[in-house]
Image 1 (spheres, rainbow, N blue to C red):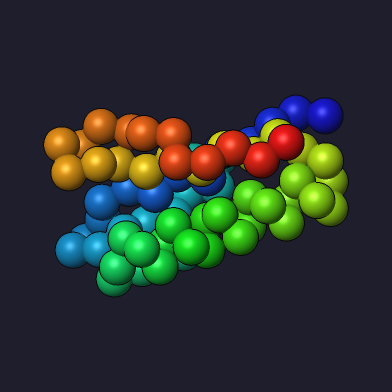
Image 2: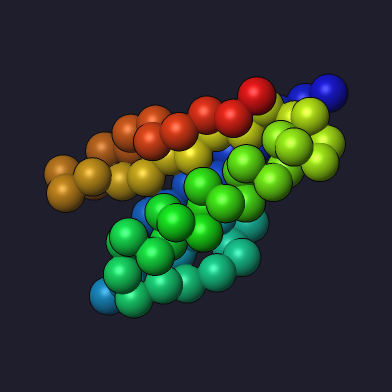
Length: 70
């Protein structure tokens, strides 16, 4: 089973959540975006057994791995 990546990036004064590169949600606050991304990744792993990583941009614009499920 292939893995997937949920990525939270700066966008339009807030944060865009990308699911394998496709935009799925926009959040005004980083913390809410990370909360939903972690929930989605955990659920995806529990339901499908897929390895799912959560990545987010830091204040310098670099991507960091926040969590991995599976």
